[in-house]
Length: 433
Image (cartoon, rainbow, N blue to C red; front, side, top):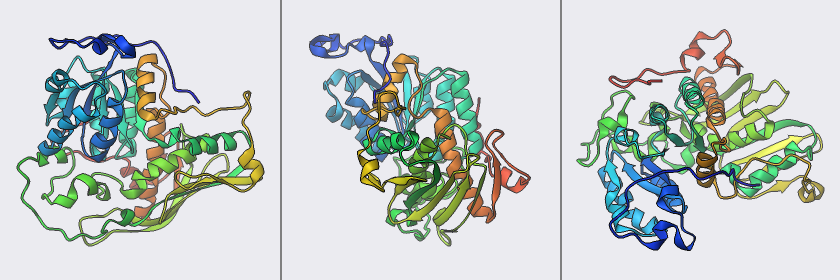
């Protein structure tokens, strides 16, 4: 289980007036000319507390720009840089661009890659613009708001020869890697059923908060936050941590946590670059308030290889893979098997081993930016995982079984379902490819 490796890419920028020895590569530090320059777009919980912090812990990273439409969050992230830095530098802190417009970061020639941690509806437009500008992209899951947008982004990444990482840590967790290797090396026999459970009722959030129009905070560019989404009156629960329960901006818990566990299901099934051939199910949506995504559901997907994926809402989150000779399951951070024999089974050197990175998705992304190899969750994989979740939402909305062609990425003989593959965009925003 090794991360991708490769030669260091050459990147250059101006030095501060006083250069510490560590900045020149002494004492095992990485010299600035060998660091990867990053711009961060979206600085909420994922952007600041996870991605900015974890990337800044890497010795070969230089943060050159920060962007958020909420000025208070932007200032907080900028100040946090000093606490996160491995080598605190007042000069680096002062020289970091702070902006409320992500296009300022895309326009910078000295930025190698962007880290996109925005609400879901902004993922694809920003990532496409970055790739077209020659930048590599680390993008939080779910990769897209619609299936069509995911296909566009995956194609652009390939056409532009960019490195892309779908921000999902589960493929680097030892228990998930162990599950994959046992399944793919036949320790549970022929796989017939995979079960994933996802947090129901928004994980405890009020599913029907009262809607009340509020004045827009002075430090918040709400129009930019909405972007291509329909115009709507401002209310605090619409934005930030609870945006994902509104279908104009995300797909609910199904696409949020489903992008983790359904990704492992696809991975274990060997179908993470394709998808199922049908989906059906039933569920219940939040009604009568601001939120309108699914709060309870049970979905059944069929694959061409005969495997059935059952994804349902539950109190906790987990994955279980069942075969003719036993089962393995991971309730989040633990690992369980149907027998001690399976649990103790060793994977031989000549058997298949998971493509993973013990250092996590941030480390894997940096390694691949240098080597130009695919990350462990590239754009095509991220797109196919998001597609699973989007298909589920469409089946729940229409209340009927849908047949799917994973090659053409179209529902069969169902115009109503196919209309839900894309969305319109509020002027003047367009998705330029």
